[in-house]
Amino acid sequence: MGDSCLTPPQVEELRAELERQLARLRRSMKTTEQAARPVELDQTAVGRLSRMDAMQNQHLTKNLQEREELRFGALHEALERIEAGTYGRCSECDGPIAFERLWVVPEAVDCGQCP
Ligand SMILES: [Zn+2]
Image 1 (cartoon, rainbow, N blue to C red):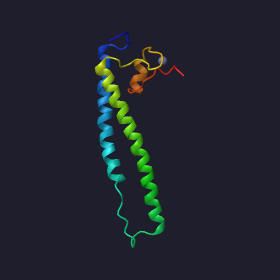
Image 2: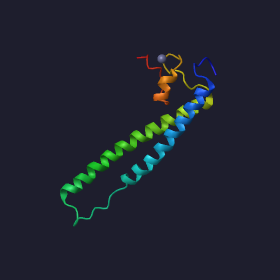
Image 3: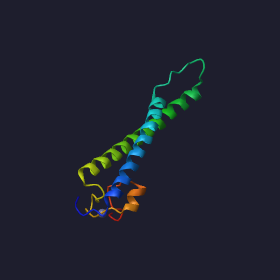
Image 4: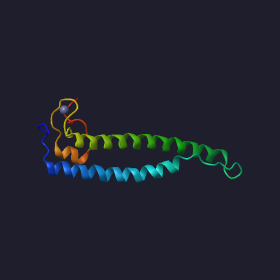
């Protein structure tokens, strides 16, 4: 396990937190996916303005989707690092990442002190 400053119970706690956040994110991604579906625009019912609204909304939804996918990947990678035993080490200085930091950002890859 290297000289990570995390105790096994702390790692388990963080793993549970990562899984909770993943489950929550999956639900939210499902909602976003539905919102991202192309809207059938009824020309008679929607005016030009609401058509622009719909396009703008889709743009925002697309941004949200991208952010969610990035976070999904980051959470997954954190779980993989737990499996590999490399979790809780800074990718920059290789020093330990404080439990308090991981508790707030469990997918953190750096110690927070590195530039
Ligand atoms: Zn560092």
